[in-house]
Length: 174
Image (cartoon, rainbow, N blue to C red):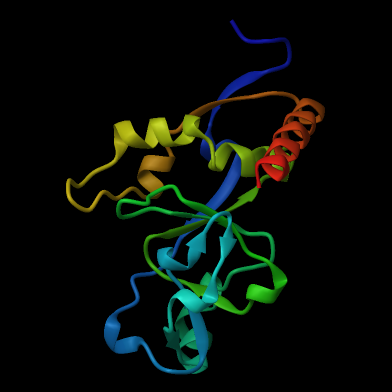
């Protein structure tokens, strides 16, 4: 039984998401556009100092422009032992181009950014990913797994209230 106004839906109904391209070692350079790897995602933030990988701006412009991050993108790791770790892209992090094993999210209209953010870092998401994930030593998930994620979504005003309460707790814990 769902509370009044709540609905059961799948993740693609509330958010747009995109997995980074499979950049290869030979593409990396010492300058250009910084590449966002899962190593850069720490404690809800982006630490650009954790890696030193770049690809040329020419390559970004010709092949990877649609993988450039935007301010407030919510990103999660989709590979390795730290899968589902979460971060938010800030203006000072830009420019960044995504790499494989990083998935970015944006809420659809009618979905609260804060609610989506809280859901993406929740144990509810991780527990569903745990049942879908592939790989043993190197666990992985991607868009085909995310299409199967089911969640309960309250009406927009309740989403905002839930997000505000959880954000308050996050700040207190931090």
